[in-house]
Length: 250
Image (cartoon, rainbow, N blue to C red; front, side, top):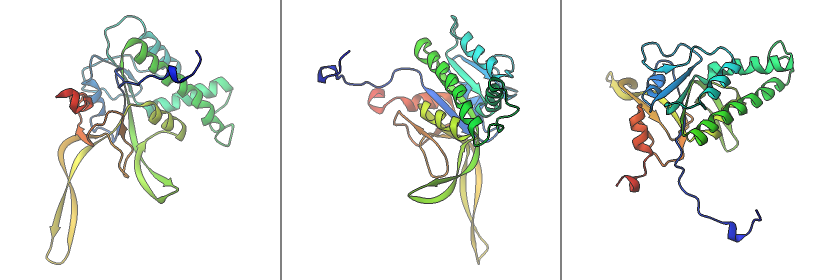
């Protein structure tokens, strides 16, 4: 096809199911959130489903098994959402796969970060396979990750700490680029000020409400492509409601 002004067309809002990454502390409710999605099927890499009723593959212990599970979902089935739980438990399996392919004893053997760069090729295969489930089989994707506090350095501001996905730099960048929604899950905290007559101090108190932040703040990675409000309840129904544009919902 030749490229000219006649080949220009107007883009439209993406109608495909969302690609969601949710990160947060342990036991904040990430797996429970994903279990509330439309007809979910879990690809478990850790024992995070205790007490949660959901369809799941057996515990996957290699990168090859993960890719086999994803490929099996291209056969006719009724599942609507594919959940990978969790990315940081997948990471060492990716390293092991890259090491086996190259005959390394460990991911550090090549030196100078070359092992991690080589592993990025397997991460790309993983994200491409998930994209296929989304675009060709109309399945939503949810990737769960734990958070880690890391130092963030930018050229225009002083360095500061923030919550990021507990991943190496390569897969972290790929996940952020791939996702339509990146949510940071946490228990809501209310600030209570206390005074003893001489000094006033602030104390954080948990409200019991679990929330999902979907727009970035200096303290955490988040973001979305749907114009969603900053914070919603940590539930799949709240996420779906927030994805609908105000004009469309009216």
